[in-house]
Image (cartoon, rainbow, N blue to C red; front, side, top):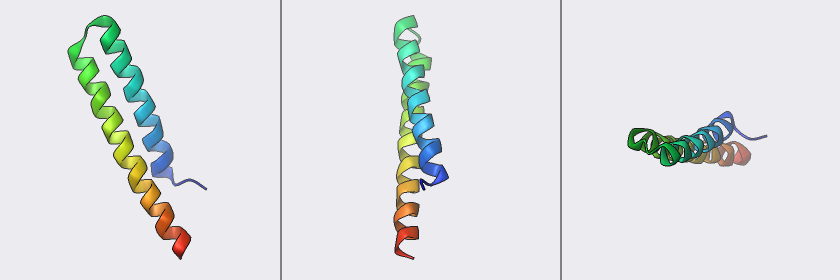
Length: 59
């Protein structure tokens, strides 16, 4: 089963993409930047979850 961090990270990544898209459409640079930051945060959290999964599989 996927680690909670991986699921939450994927959700943050998707939310960030949506936020960035809305920022592009509306011309809101702050919203675009927040969206990109959310994507990075989500990718990092997803990676951490993947590492946790790998460690748990070995034990």
